[in-house]
Each structure stands twice: as C-alpha cells, then as structure tokens.
Image 1 (cartoon, rainbow over the protein chains, first blue to last red):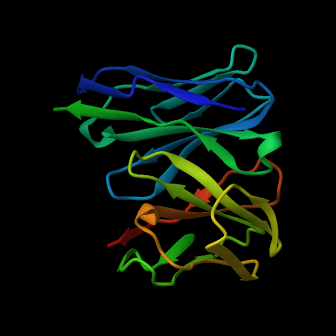
Image 2: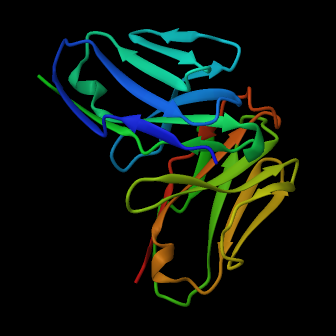
Length: 113
Length: 114
C-alpha cells in the first residue's frame, strides 16, 4: 500500500531564507507527483507536476525534484517570503489507485518578516 | 472564469438529514473526483468518474452517492448524515484517465454535522 510521508510537519523560517520540503513515498511505481499549496480555509492550488520520466520541474522561485528509485521528492523554495506561508502538500499518482492522487499530510510553512 | 467550482461553500446541518454538494468544471476535462479532508487535514480520495462512469469507489459508506449528469458536473449526495461526516469535501478534475494529467481542485465545501 502506497504511503506518502512529508517531513517536517511544520517549519518556521525568516524571510529571505532558502528552504527544502521533503516528500517520500513507499511504492516507486508512480505515474506522477504533484505539489500543492493550501492556504488556511482555502482550496488546493497546484504548484508543480512532475511526470515519472522527469527529474525536476521549475516555476519561478519553486523547484521540485523527483527521484523515483529512492522514493523521494523535494520542493525547493528560494528567497522565501511571508506570502509563501501555507501548507504544502505532496501527492503521487499511483497505477493501482486508478487516477486518484495519494496525499501526504503536508508541511505547514511559516515565513516571518 | 472559475475552473472548478463547488456549492455550497459551507453547509451546516443536523444529524440524520440528507444533503447534496454540487461541483462543476469548465476546463473541458472528462475525469472528476471527490476527495475528503478530515479534521487532521488529511486528504483522501472518495470517488473518481471518467466520462460519467465510476472508475474508483474507495471504501466509503453507501450513504455517499455520487451523481454525474454530464462530464462537467459531479455531485455528491449524502444520506442520513452522521457526526463523523463533518469534513471539507473537495472536487477535482483532470483530462483523461492518464495519471500524467494534472488535477485541479475546487475551493472545497466545509460540512458541519451537528
């Protein structure tokens, strides 16, 4: 059974710091991996989608990497800003799950000014 | 120009009632989903529909019944509501059944059962 783990559960950093959020999954037979952002009381915003054949994706200050063999993905946020404060969710698409995503429990990020 | 919309945003009701949540997407996608986010913020798939046909039905009580009148809509009807049904329900959509396709989520419906 696929399990998705995100470490740390919470992270507090000062503004301007570069940071890395970690995601690990137990079954390497994934189709893709998607990073989301969730603000309190809000829906999910898709940040980056990495196909299983890709190693990384970049969007602005965000860079996500994927290492299927080790079952890991990282989300790198450069020059963090208070507006980056949110919960970041990692989700994997697994063949056995049809087309649904299997989610981690998220990392709650707080960036102080 | 909302991509995936849900109504209502908030729903407060008594135990034992029947309620529905509506979802619509204007992205032209043919696959839609319902996810449940519990009080610990953990998101889990409930149902998945492709071209109005059910393709995933996770272990949820049969009090929950999804209905897809067309590809752009996936509604969730819940009978005999229980306290444990209180959660945030998210609708999502993607193009095709390939997992290479990105999923887009609605704003969520916060259901509170009293």
